Amino acid sequence: MSKKVRVRFAPSPTGPLHIGGVRTALFNYLFAKKHGGDFVLRIEDTDQNRFVEGAEEYIIDALNWLNIPFDEGIGKDGGFGPYRQSERKDMYKQYAEQLIASGNAYYAFDTAEELNFHRKDHEAKGKTFIYNWHNREKLTNSISLTKEEVENRIANGDDYVVRFKMHNTEDGVDSVISTNDIIRGQVTFKKELLDDKVLFKSDGMPTYHLANIVDDHFMEITHVIRGEEWLPSVPLHIALYQALEWEAPEFAHLPLIMKPVGKGKLSKRDGDKMGFPVFPTQWKTKEGELFSGYREDGYFPEAVINMLALLGWNPGSEQEIFSLDELVNTFDLSRVNKAGAKFDPEKTKWFQHHYLQEKDNDTLTALFSKVLEEKGIVTNNNLSIIVKSIKERATFVSDLWNQGSFFFEAPTTYDEKASKKAFKEGTSEVLSQIIDLLIGCETFSSEEITTKVKGWITTNEIGFGKVMMPLRLSLVGEMKGPDVFDIAAILGKEESINRIKNTISYLS
Image (cartoon, rainbow, N blue to C red; front, side):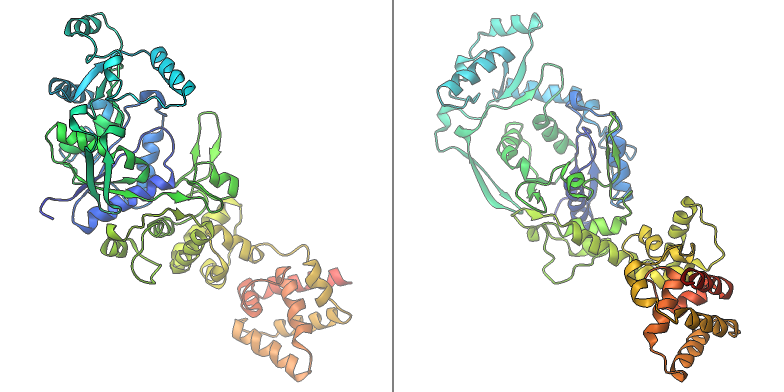
């Protein structure tokens, strides 16, 4: 590419960042890094009525947690700031006026009541009201009004918006706008079917359409990678570039992320309904409503990234596990699917399980220590050995407690189904013999315990089930956990014997 690649992720601070937005950010990041370019974060806060306190900070925190930080943005000025649209509004007005002066836009003074009247009138006639070339001369705007009337209205402080003149009758009915979308190929729009969008509002703020064009131009954005919900806006954006005599960036419109079951786009409330997060981190509304996040639910950021990367993108191989560096090297927009990608919560857990297994024991031990601390557990046991013995069955760090709580708390009950099968007449005597064997162990290593107990079983021709099941229930309370002799070795001689004695007391 001749120009340095510059892409932007431009969310609105109207609430928490949905994972659909996270995927958009990720694909922008991967594309930028693949081509040695810049990843820019721009906050599109032109709609001040929908601004939510804390949303901007949430977005930045989420990107940093996911390890896809922006190169430029708030707090990281790359010479193209400011990066909040609310701080750039003076320049938007300039280009709105330029479009008016060139005949590509016009003032519209129609009140909300007037527009509502036209909508209802059209509905009554079975039509849809569209503000465009076929009726603009009949409505209240600088095309239908005289120059003096327009000047007087503005001087009097009448509310107005600036609309883009999308199509003129002299253009002909076959007038179209086309572009080659990187993902979707050639897309074409008939201009006569499009409306005259509002570019500038009476509150002195631009709409998204004007602001993003101006910002992308002056921030030297080369590629606009965004969700397919913006595909209908492409003809307007291209027309604006043409009207301002600027070079348009290349466009790529990503497929939707679909619900796991049923039809439709994955929504912000689907997660809590179905039991999985749809936000990268936890979000609390000002009303106190709490939405779960991947971070707080125990997911590793690399698991979330790996999952999102494969939602709509095909690497062209059977490989599913990718480090961030591997994703950067492999990523290609041309391999992004056009069709929506169905979200699979279980697949996300599969990725999480993989990355937990890949964590070194020291890291997991440190994380597990925090879990124990929160539970008020103090132990002299070797945590690293415990973690190593139970991590295979864990998906989340919290699962380490579920899988290994018995290392820290002696059982007070025994699994009902297993105990009916394991606890028989003579079980107390068998367990008493086991105690004697354990007392005789010198090193109390797993190997020594194994040799002594299995040797005794073989010598006395006792069924393994008569010994091993009661022993496991004594130490664990359930039929779970790693090798029972490993468990005994970790617990130590005294604790192991005490637990077996408790079982004998329970059986007596």
